[in-house]
Amino acid sequence: MEHPDYPLDLSAEDVRGLYRDLVIVRRIDVEAVALARQGELGLWTPLLGQEAAQIGSGRAASANDMVFPTYREHGVAWCREVEPLKLLGMFRGINHGGWDPKEHGFHLYTVVIGSQTLHATGYAMGIQRDGVLGTPSAGATIAYFGDGATSQGDVNESFVFASVFNAPIVFFCQNNQWAISEPLERQSRIPLYKRAQGFGFPGVRVDGNDVFACLAVTRKALENARTGQGPTLVEAYTYRMGAHTTTDDPTRYRLKAEEEAWKLKDPIERVKAYLVRGDMADAGFFERVEAEAKQITKELREACLALPDPGPLSMFDNVYAGEHPLMTEEQEQFAAYLASLEEESK
Image 1 (cartoon, rainbow, N blue to C red):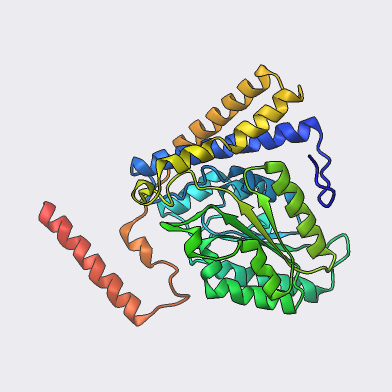
Image 2: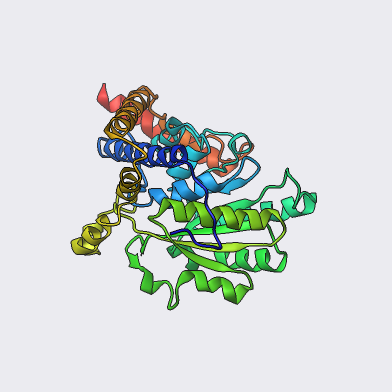
């Protein structure tokens, strides 16, 4: 049922497009996990279960908006037309992002927990000072982070600045219940969206497994930001079905029954059921989407395997703008160590 405060007018074609996004993004994620397990990626951060939160919010952003992700927003990257291979290249260790943030309106991934919220707030204050709010060219920022990041000082500081300066920003918290191995109750005694009240701006909780709700709420929050109404905190209540990263084992800290309960709320199956009930898609449509997703990931795997292995000494590249004595010394020591291994192998 449509919420009166968050109207959403979607055609059958729009709904089919969202379903396609969800299926393809999940398939890319599953393929990337497999590549990491096979040693082709150094690491991967799965998004399994969070597709609706990412696709819904990602499709809500306009071309003039700037997105500030963490390290798991593969679905949002898809919405911003960032080539998936560039994500894999980063986790393979051969690039530092690989895409132009300005071109895609999508900033580089941020591993330092919560720091991107300050970057996003500063960018939003810049938009405000450009004097374009309320005009057709107005943009806003949207900053993504998880429930664990709400305990970080950077996030709370960004709330302060965004509030007092009425900055055009949406804080999008994907509450997936687990901050690595720490459950939500170790992060907050109240629902996370209510924290916004203490900083003086609105907060709203949305079903993070409902792509329509995430789209409607984020679209409204971004529109409010663009028209000078200030920040909003959106808490997308969802669940991380997979591991925190491919180096994590979630069976050590959570119950299988919990995962099974959330499987019943699968975001893709919900949209599929909606399409079927509304007679908006037939079996042929679902087969075509599956075939397209399979072909995309087949080509992605082949392209990933064709990427070069990063050279061991490349870790020293671009650390500093110029030469640095300590860095040079460390690089020489490591080069000598590598050379010694080659001598031993002869």
